[in-house]
Image 1 (cartoon, rainbow, N blue to C red):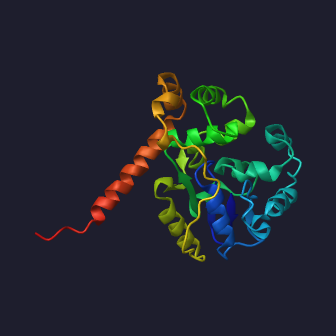
Image 2: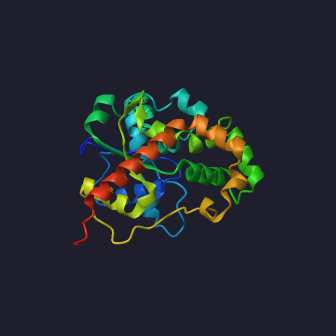
Image 3: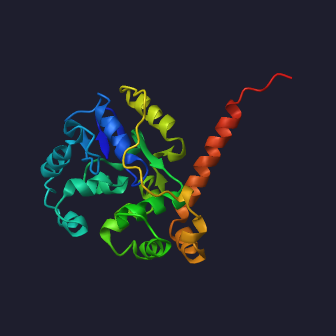
Length: 256
């Protein structure tokens, strides 16, 4: 999560949407500094310089301390003592709750998050939570139990929570399907350095595209996700359709 009141900008990190890469590039693009609120980056490969990894958890703690919420019991109950870890994947509603931003500011600012196909995102999240290669049986168990374990829920909670506050959309979706171009668009919004190559960090070892989807998403699991993540599927379908319509309108007609 990055919130800059100076720039009237916010980026919220939906788990398993390339958010580690995006947050790192935003942090290195030369725009943000200690005046901004930035949660830490975790899980980076050892090839990334430590100076780049040493992110702004202190900025989060500083703000929460100023608000008198640095020892908030609600954080402790959720994920233990690391406030910065929890805020890494804070939703807009979380940020409002802890006084980091207001609903009025969310309406005024440019606010972004990445949106990914719900089938793919939940598979990637389950693989991450399991810490290794998934078998169909482990995956199905993870899907059924994801709401029972805080760390799993944080990874797999509905992506729509990052785009809506009490039914009002406050966040502009960036499509994971077009990751490189969307990252460049985001960097242009903040006016930062445009990297010639967009890297991909924390890429999973196992992707749904290389497997038989039906082995993992049987009828029972499909029904569970389509019911519990109905807003995710609807948002993804709508954004894809809107982008396709824009693409069609921008096509140059071929001369006859």
